[in-house]
Image 1 (spheres, rainbow, N blue to C red):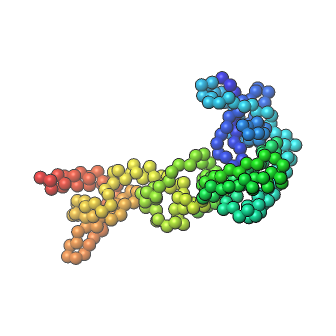
Image 2: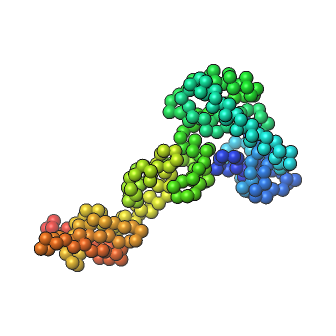
Image 3: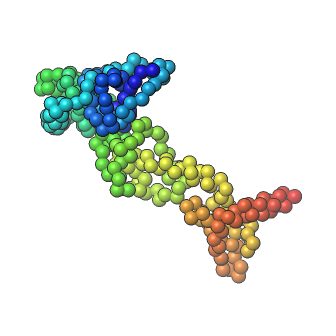
Amino acid sequence: MPKVTGLKFAKTNYVYYFKINNKIRLKKGDICLVKTAIGLDLGKVVIPYKYIKNGEIDTPLKNVIRKANKEDFKKLEIIKREEIDALNICKEKIKKYNLPMKLVYVKYLFDKSRIIFYFVSSQRIDFRELVKDLAKVFKTKIELRQIGVRDGTKLIGGMGICGREVCCASYIQKFTPIHINMAKIQKIALNQSKVSGLCGRLMCCLSYESEFYKECLKKYPKLKDNIETEKGTGKVIEINVLKKYVVAELEADGGIKKRIKIPEEEFGELLIKNKSAKNNDNK
């Protein structure tokens, strides 16, 4: 079984595996120089080593070249500054050609054999002239990569309304579909500022507890259901999953409506009574 190490690269949350030999000793947090499918790059060790079966490998694994040294870190600092300069230069070129695209991130490969420009746009862009212009400036292979708004936010990063770093930048590996029903089932106010993330789409965190709410609500009466309680017939007007109760409004007695709170512990008895009442009605 080959011995591998798991690495993460800048602005990604995926773990990529590379072969290592016994001469290279790695620990979590080390920076390694590796050759990827598109060129040299630096990756951070998140899994120092593990053994995997040959059947688990989809494609041939590349080798870790070595641990990064002082010269590599100096070069990395220079590259980061050059990426900022490249970002500003490309923005000016985009204005020059009046292209409907938003540039969000620039990445140089470690050997500077390629520079990748990530941009967001709602339409297809003819950027052939832009590429030619950029190639004259940077004297290397130019790649413009169009991404979605959620991927754009993942690259830029930022703080969510919860006060923490946005989930897509901190740990999410793959985006999943988010539906407005996920907010409705959790009784979250359907205010755009409350349910939308920095990308303008529904927040990824809406999906985290939606399954929990779905399972819990199976044992609750539905909103507006008519239920039979010890104090009379009432209609469910509120459901609180977290505090484990429902509120029922009893039928008016002398024109005055009364509300009662029914804890989750009484749901079993409550639902049995409702079932019996429905059976009697059917008879």
